[in-house]
Image 1: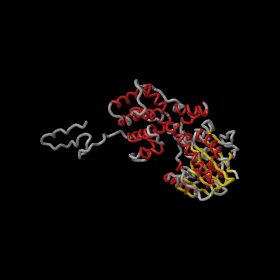
Image 2: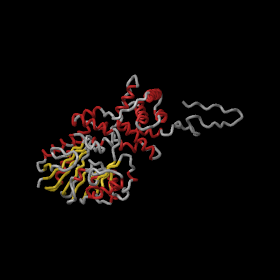
Image 3: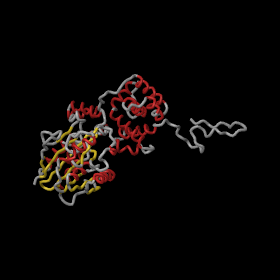
Image 4: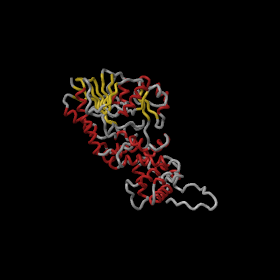
Length: 447
């Protein structure tokens, strides 16, 4: 509480300044906070956006960090929030072990403890710095609670498990669909940020770029580097020799081969597949309804000296002027397959979301099927680990469209199934750094 000003000393002017908590005009001021508190406040906003409102972490970043002065604080807030999501079940188990009564999931004290503990136990922040920048975010009695629980846990010497636990609902769903081995592999995959995959504009230069960048190649036109590299500082970025793209995400466009006419890249942003198709010689029309994400695509086209027609449109309303030779449907999906880079999907993806995305995919596939020439090829892909968005989607499509048939995928691609589709899982390429979860099917319209 702000104390009222005292009477000035008789005979001398009062030079003590305004009352505590007010400026010279009597306006209330926030008490001075430890350096770094604003970044922790933004981290809590990010977690709240993901866990309570179901927003993607990246989508919430701009709003949650708008009050921060510069890039480092923004990056710190993102790092704290992302690492908290990687470790959330284990952090909550620690908190519950040190409280007599379980804190509600949405309690501010729980959020504060999560980010304070993850800094110490996973990010290497000294305990005093972690707690001093978090306590200002908690008012009243919870402040003592947070300090006490934090001290109990950190002084006990307890550590987070090397392999994080997955959210119970996600674990049950994936075990039912893919088995215990996949769930165990997924837990290993979430333990650390994944490596950095690059797709080369010129596959013939694979060995050259692998040597220049100090990476390894797992496919022609691919180079893998350790995580933590600053992309824009890498050799070849400015001249557009490559772009960032997970190896699994690069497979769909590869399956269309060298350019043989006009191709539609549906749901094209942020544009990795568009760049692949253009580099392979296709006449590309890239369509997406997000103007902001297409801005990134245009920037990448300019940087890599590739060309494509870019269209802002909703595929439920847009149609091409005439049938085309090939179509790549990188369909909107739950994105559960990219959980290594986006741990928020572990908490946002629920059965209702999967059902909603599956219906949207059905609509897009049904419309796109009429845009392909007889004899043409369509590749359907989703970065999802949910069968409803992959295997079941294509099975239903083929029942509805007898003019289409699977064009079985063969070769050395990872994850080829008995049906001739591709299903990549966290179990694959474990020694090489793993890959994202994708479903991919190649279809041909009967001539």
